[in-house]
Every structure is written in structure tokens, then in C-alpha cells.
Image (tube, rainbow, N blue to C red):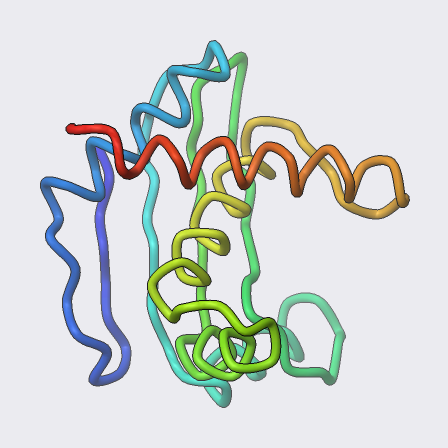
Length: 139
């Protein structure tokens, strides 16, 4: 089950379309969807989570809490829509493509991909690009 939740006034996404896309990402990685929740929120909301749960005092675009077990994808993905908008401008990308990148990024973390080393980051970026293309395939 995939849920999309909103903690700010971010325009709601088509839950059916996005759920099918997110599930197709998980299936393409040989995993199964359990319970996956996306929470779209403000910078301040995500900063508080970062401070309270990760002891980080910085803004970020995404925080993923991984509750996966034996190939069953369970997790919570928090996305700052403020960061997505700002990053889209910085990276000269459309807001929707940047949103797709961040959403795919969270799911890929749950599928086992990291991004700490240069090599992991390179693979993550390739996977993000691959999964963004999947969004444009008729769901």
C-alpha cells in the first residue's frame, strides 16, 4: 500500500498514477511493496525531523526511514517541497522532474542503494534517471 500525505499546501498528486509508478520502481528492483508512505512537507517540518531523529541541524530535501524486511519495501519518505522547488531552480530542472528524482531517490534507498561514496552516488543518479523515464511510460 502506498500513501501520499501532505503537511503543507503542496498541490496533491494523482495518487493512482503515482502509486503505479512507485510500485513499478519497486518491482523493477525485484522487491515487493509493503507499506510505503510519502509525506510532502515544508523545510521547517523536515528540519525538525532531521534535528529530532537524526541529530542533524541542516535543511535537506528528503529523509527516508527504512522499515524493510526480506525484500518487502516498508518505509516513510519525507520530502521538503520547499527544497524541491529551490533545487529545481539550482539544477535548471523542472519542479516536476526534480520531484520525481527525489521520490525515486527515496524508493531506491529502500531498495538498498546508497549514495555516500562517489561510486554509490553515480549509480544512484543512473537509477534515478532510469526510474524517472518509467514515470512517462503509460501506467
